Structure formats: structure tokens, C-alpha cells
Image (cartoon, rainbow, N blue to C red; front, side):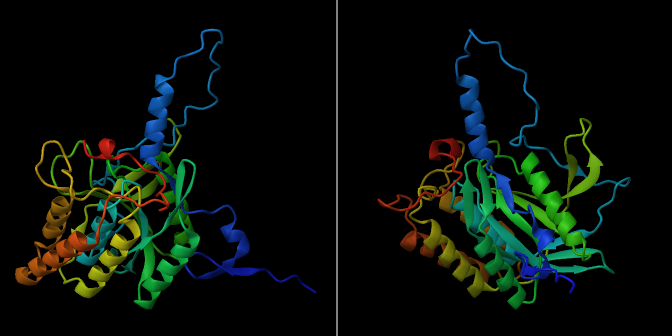
Length: 334
């Protein structure tokens, strides 16, 4: 009797061979945590009695790699259009935590038109294993099911670099490349988006967002595949106001008492007089500025502001679990 191949559901809810999932995990390194520890290592006094041993590898998973830009010689494999709803939720999620946040992107891909439409962003819970942050598998499955109920396919993921450039780390590149390969088996596309709300080098109130894929080109030193970023177009249809409001309520409830929560009443940058909440509202206002009905947009922003003012607290209570992969408040708000 022939042995039957064991079939399981992948994190996206699809049936597949169990061997296809061996060794897979949706993870990326916390750039902030690694940067801090690397600086600590540099500051440690060396021991003169020992000769330093040469390192086996110069691989630094923290290293941020600037994305290449598509050109006439290497054109975009497809266009990327992002709905206002997805931009709003990613910005809201990224702004409230000094830890890296993570989530899934849902939408559709048109092969004839070569267009990826990002229609929704679904925040997920994250786990930490020391220096690595990864998506909680239960939350990941729930998010993919939520997107499926709305008629969307999982077409990517997003995460934040709270106080760093929105460039992928070497581990981000590895994670993105693996999932591109996994999804391409069925002809699907898979993009990555990085949101940087509090980049120290960016005094403007607007978040920096990078949308990327990993190419087959190899870096000059042969250590990684080259990332390329898209010129993203914003879709003009109105978001589902009620849905965004409920996602905001969930985000506030999750992060309001966490030790990683951003103090939304504090000034976000030394060269600005805006608080973190005011900065967030400016980001949302910019996203909504292309909408035709400005009155509805302003009413929505007022409701979001009132929700934060009435429900959000930035000081954790005793016994509240700390968010993982954090960067300290002083380090963030410089």
C-alpha cells in the first residue's frame, strides 16, 4: 500500500505538502535591538591578553541595504497600487509602538494588466526569540482568513522600522526572497512594505514607506540578492471608515499599556513642535488629501484623535507584558 503524503494547511490557509513548510518561519531581525547591541559590543574594552580571533564571516544581519531603483534597463515587473485604507492602517499601527510591528497585506494581482493592488492591511501579533521578531503563526493564520473573507489574497507583508531608514535589513531580504519564491509557485506575487514613522534623519511629520521586491541579481560581494523598490500609486476610492476605526480601536487596546507604547503626547522630533499624536494625524491627513470629500476626512480624523485622547495611555501598569524588540523612548524621539 502506497504511503499517503501528509497534507497540512500553510499559514495562509492553503493546503500543501508538509515538506513544503519545513524550515519556514515568517521572521525578521529587530534592527533597533541589533543596532543597540552592536554599539554595546563596540564600547566593551578589549582584552589585551588575548589575540582576537578572525571572524568566520562578516555577515551582519542588522545591515540595512538601500534599495535599487527600477529603470529603462530594468523595468518594474508590475505596478503597485495601494488603497488609502491600507496606508491608514499601516501608519496607525507603526506610530504607536517603539517595537517593530508586523502585518499582512491583502489584495489582488491582474496578470493581463501587470498590476498589484494592495487593498487592505491586517495587523498581526509578533513574537520575539532574542534578537529576532517574527509573526505569531496563529495571528498570521487569522489575518489571512480575515483577508480571504473580504475576497482578498495575501499579496505581501509589512513591518516597521520605528526610528530607522525604511531600507530592508539582510534578514528582511532573506525573508522576502523566501516568501516570493513560495508564492511564485502558484503564479502569485508577494511584496514587502517597510514603514518608518520616526526616522531620526527625517524631521518631516510624514512617514517614509518603501515597497520592495527582491531581484535575482546578486550583490558584488555575493552575500545577498539585490532589493528593488517600486514607485507606488495611491488608489483614490474612499476607505471603509468604520473598518479603519475598529482597527484603530484594536491597535489602541493592544498597545496603550505596553512598555513599548509611544508616548503620543510627547514631541516627536527635536526640530518640531508637533506631538506624536499630531504627527500621526498629519500623516493620515496627507493620505486622505487626495480624497474628494474633505469634510468626511476631517470628521474621521477628529474621531481618531478623540479615540486616542480618551483611550490611549503611554505609561504601562504593573504586570503588563512588555512588547518585544523595542527601542527606548529617548532613542526614538530624538
